[in-house]
Every structure is written in structure tokens, then in C-alpha cells.
Image (cartoon, rainbow, N blue to C red; front, side, top):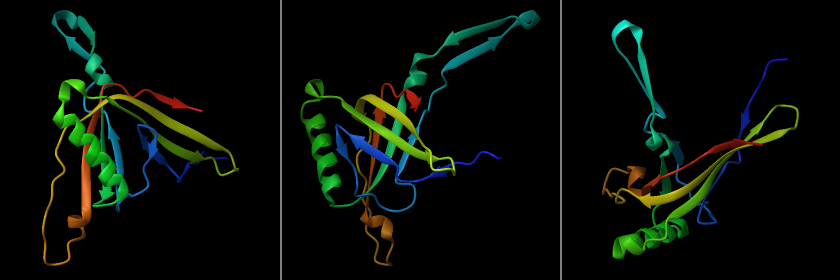
Length: 151
């Protein structure tokens, strides 16, 4: 039988708070913007390899309903970071994907994030033609580490 993956009922939490006030479309996007290793090949095909520790960094973009309780919570966390950056308590969280195999078995594909800070302001727009994007708050958080585990 062919392998299948049924995705759904995913969870994102920040500092123990399970986020629920998501907008539409891609509501959570966890990416790794840096390479985990570098390779350089020189004369005679000799190659040099270097571990890139910044490859552990992850960026999380969240699309929340503007003005919702989750928006208010994250806005408060961002305000604390801006008031006293040196005293900031770094964000932790989990990005959990639930994957079914079509036979009733579920696997948790989990990224455990730590060392997080907000890296961009929440932008705003005003549109009189019904653009629903004006009702979305987008948060960008960078984490220093986000190892993946499959259980």
C-alpha cells in the first residue's frame, strides 16, 4: 500500500498559550532561512565543510485576527520586549503537526522552539474596497533553536 499523510488539527503555542485566533490561508509558517552547513570546493576537487550554527534559527510568521485575544496577548509580549529589551524573557513554543496514516494512526511532527524574539512590527493597512487583509495582524518571531521530533 502507498504511504499517505493526512494533515489537520495542528497546534501552535507560544509561552504555553495555545493560539486559536488564526486568520485565513497560511496561518502559521515556520521556516529555516539559513543553511545548516557550507561547502566550498577548491583546486583538484578538494572540499572544505563548515557547520553553520545559525542554520538552527527558525522564523515563525503568524497570521492572527486583528484585535483578537491572541493578537492582544502577542502585542503585550512585543510591548514588553520593546520597553526593556535587555530584560526580555525569550519566547518558547511548539509547532505541532498531526499526521494521520489513513489507518487511524496519528504521528506528531513537533518543532520545539526556544530563544524567541519579535523581529518585525505588526503592519497595518486601510482599504475601502473590502480587502480582508486589513483585518489580519502578522507577527514575525525568530527563534534561536527549533529542533524537530517525530513521535
